[in-house]
Length: 175
Image (cartoon, rainbow, N blue to C red; front, side, top):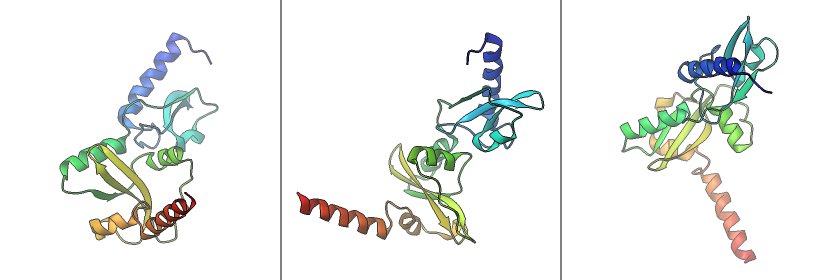
């Protein structure tokens, strides 16, 4: 689709607005690999997150990605700078983080078990390198120690370590 200069300028203006304020409808922060979309609602051009696309009137005008760090990346950087003694963190998802994780991995987020809460484990593996994983909690965030948080993540769970060791053993036998 070819846009004229005036149309591009209107989209740029909305992009600047949602870059700072998030989705025009739900205010969810946007950024990083989570897509944002532009369309009309009640005659006005707006920018929305993936979850609010169906609330637009008619078809999309444009879709894109921001070329800046995602809100969860900035949050993680700031938190680990303020807490240098910590390596693990447990927190609620930020904005479109779960959708972005699904896009990055190619896997859908598992259904939330009854009476549990979805959270994100963040591991500061080294300065500037953080890994994230989705976990389900049965208690409030503050109830978990750093050692418990470490074991929640798939990359540190006893099952994952055992599977990795078994795979490595089989690989070694084949060589």
